[in-house]
Amino acid sequence: MTYKVLNNITVKNINNGVISNVSTDLLVIPVNNKTISSDEFKEIDKKSNGYLLKSSKEALNPGNQNHLITSINGITAKKILLVKDLNEKDDIYLWLNKYKYIAKIANSMNCKNLSILDGQVYPNGKNQLWFLEMVSRSIESGAYIFSTTKNKTAKTEKVGKEIISSNVSLKNVTLITSKLTSAQLKKAKISVLRGFSVGEGINTAKHLGDLPANHATPKIIEKIVKNTTKEYQGLKVKSLNEKDLARLKMGSYLSVSKGSDEPPRMIIIEYNGGKKNEKPIALVGKGITFDTGGISIKPSPGMDEMKWDMCGAGTVFGVMCSLARIKADVNVIGIMACAENMPSARATKPGDVVTSMSGQTIEILNTDAEGRLVLADALTYVGKYKPSYVIDMATLTGAVVVALGSHASGVMANNQFLADKIIESGEETGDRAWQLPLWNEYKSCTRTNFADLANIGGGREAGTIHAAAFLSKFAEDYKWAHMDIAASAWSSSPKGGTGRPVSLICDLILNKKLK
Ligand code: BES
Ligand code: MN
Ligand code: ZN
Picture 1 (cartoon, rainbow, N blue to C red):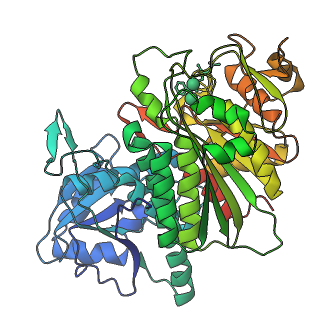
Picture 2 (cartoon, rainbow, N blue to C red):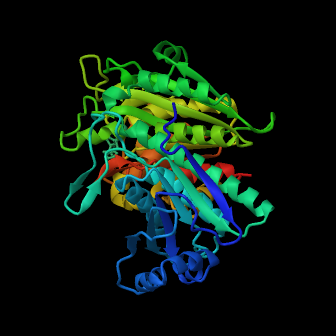
Picture 3 (cartoon, rainbow, N blue to C red):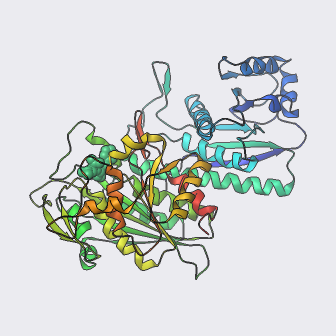
């Protein structure tokens, strides 16, 4: 099942400035020079005897608090939230944060519904449609609160200054536009549906990541994914078990799950909304449901965070759900390479040599470099679909946390056009990515005396690139990019999945940037 937070997000277009009868728990007004001179604003300001304009002007003063909650007699909205708006020059991430924050305020006030007035001010180069899509996506994803493994009676509490809601109250959101023609309104509705659907994909990815590893084993994930085919007929799911993987000679993939009592699953999701003869775009996600490191075991502090080591696969699932919900006219194959990495008497040992599906043998010098081992075989397998482009997403290296921090996912590619488009979609959505080089010099590090390749190399140098260099040996037959999302896919404080890079990938696919 996909993970849904809101019931609906709709557009309400107002033609004659009658906003005082909008029935809502909370009416949000982004305060800027355009909104305060709009008919809608003037109408409610009149009812407030000028109080709204006065407090908005105060809110516009630099240095003043940037939001104010109030209520006004004579208007139907129960409460009004004035938020100081951003301006054209502000970075996109600030716009995303603003609307995620508004969703959080609404939950903390126990609102069931929320109406937001179009601010009419957008970042440079962006228009109203971009804005409506961004707000819908940010509100849906901002309203998400993980509660699956919590006692259902848990209540909202105040921790310090912060209000922590333990349940989502928000159900319906209305975006209020004014004076749109019917053609414009139709377009606006499409943008809102798109943003809402991508927001759901983000939440689906977050939720799969946030689930504890004992609640999201490869077999449980298989069941969750198979259930979505009931929801969306457009998705076809096939799953390969241990025997299937062995039949396909995926010795590299199987070496990872060998020490675990939980059997692996490689889940393949097909979505064919495009032309019959159009080659599919392929997405491949690392799905390590828990990464102990195996025999090369990790230190205990922070090891719980390795439940998020399946966020690449979670992104694939989230994107596929969004595409099906939107009924996008594209062909996409998604692969979720799921396995658990555990030490045991049966586990792979450092120095063991395995044979990958590609025929290349691999000396496993470090069992903690396991993501590249499942991906190697998944990348070989996906070649049979003759994909136009392949993008893999993986929480692959601690080194990318050091290199880029959490603001950008790392990108490495054997095709510059593909890398450029990924970075462009990152800019467009505020889900940013940045490129690292993948020159041939880096590729020699995988040499060993005992196999065709070693799974680690390069020592302390450029760990992120060396991991990508290893993967590149399995992706030579097509145009390929690798995204290292180890820093961007979840946050350590506060702990939680981010659903990245679902919005980047959706933008890339939905806006046909790869044509
Ligand atoms: N899943 C980890 C990467 C990771 C580490 C993500 C910390 C987020 C935070 C991956 O499987 C791993 O263990 N990578 C090793 C590779 C090394 C053994 C070459 C790493 O980065 O330390
Ligand atoms: Mn590892
Ligand atoms: Zn890992």
